[in-house]
Image 1 (cartoon, rainbow, N blue to C red):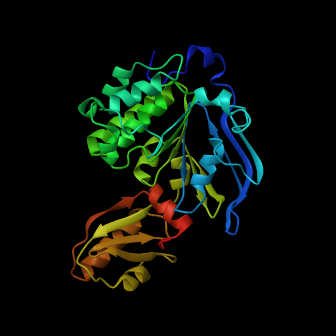
Image 2 (cartoon, helix red, strand yellow):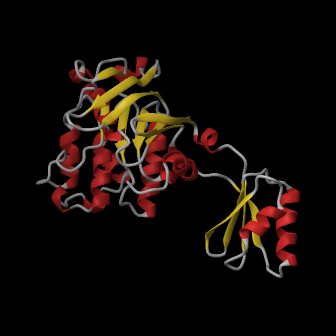
Image 3 (tube, rainbow, N blue to C red):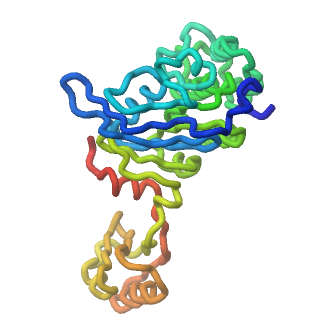
Length: 320
């Protein structure tokens, strides 16, 4: 059976309906600000849904409510069609959650911790195979308390997957990982999704969301400010970028371009033209302008907006 395939006991209904349905959630902590302000989204089976937002946006509270760890003041949540609080006992074997510090037994080796987690399920994945896939074998006997941050993340992910869940919540799954381990984790997420499992991913790594997510939900100040596929969210007029000597008069260049053009120097010697459609005439204008000012324009070409660009446009660039 493929890695991440649901248990045979639940296979018949694994593709029916949404895995998570959140409608008009509201939450305020006593004496504090509004944390969730009418937040709604869906996470479908067999898809990766990335829940993104700056610190304090409401992501952690939303996931905790979906996991049955907290209650909303109002609104409804359905997880696999059930209430995550009143139906917690029924949902527990069907939902995988990445355990953070304090959730993992610290006095045993990493592989033993995974075996203990597997023993709680009636039809767990093969522990040795899962350990090999996520690279746990190199630190299998190391006590959990001595693991590095990246090693803990891989162990926590293995513990979330070992019970063959229908839905899994992954919190920063590649945090602290080196490039090789990150790619291995991403491959496992894709395989789990391919087996029909719903994945809800929270991450601050925009590349991770762009590579893995089928659906993206951007949250800020307790509300959904944008939702769609990565392609849908990044769709729009391309920008034009080029390299040249630092300190070019960007306003003069913008004046030579069609109305609405904006030219910025994001880093010394790196320029971006936005606000207009990029076509051959725009490229020619930039190169001709540079030539008449006796400067060389290198690497002239269109650049696609990234999910990080969209995220910063929606949530701002100031620290919180």
